[in-house]
Amino acid sequence: MEFNQTARLNPYLSGAGGQQGIHTVYDSNAASAGTKSASFQDSVKNALKTTESMESIFQEAAQLYGLDVNFLKAIGKAESGFNSQAVSSAGAQGVMQLMPATARSLGVEDSFDARSNIMGGAKYIAGLLERYQGNKALALSAYNAGSGNVEKYGGIPPFKETQNYVQKVLSYAGEDMDLSGILTTGAAGGSAYQSAVDLLSQLAAGTGSMGLAFSQEDAQYMVELMRLKMETMFNSQVLSDEEESGAVDSLI
Image (cartoon, rainbow, N blue to C red; front, side, top):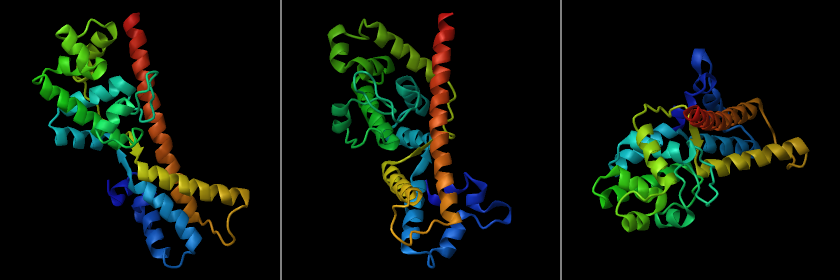
């Protein structure tokens, strides 16, 4: 997502209603800002640049690997509830719950980076669909229990977990899931965010370098980034709660 697209998520950032907007203020004041202050603003600005919706990532991944986007989203929902920080008891990580070895084989360097993880998961399921000639049930079985078990049992393995998983994903694939409101910050953005937080912590503790200025524009940048972070966490939690509620309702 380009930075000007991210900006429209917040009226002040985009300068709505005749306001300059944070980005305009930043650009006009950058030349006169001190080195330390610019460093803070640059850190936050870089983090905001990498913020994008999961919807756009899933759409891109589906197009790249020739997948039905709803099917791909259904796997993400079943695996983690779209939680980029999820870790299973078996050690699977991220939105698509990739095991570390599988992630490495797919070229995923950071499984907690939503973009990399979703792209890796899309590549993986696309390969399985090709292997099983488009049979989604068998591809999902292999995704969940491994191709070895699919071959061993000549179809969907007789594991309750795997059978429930296949049924769940195929059911989710029939839903209309719009993930535009779920925002995620890329790996580079996470590093930039941490850099900005470190500078802010130094200011609060009075341990920063002399002359480290913190302007109103700095504060507004930080508030916007925190808003995006909190919105991402909130949306992930809501989706997780909805899934748990649905599971409970199915048992009643």
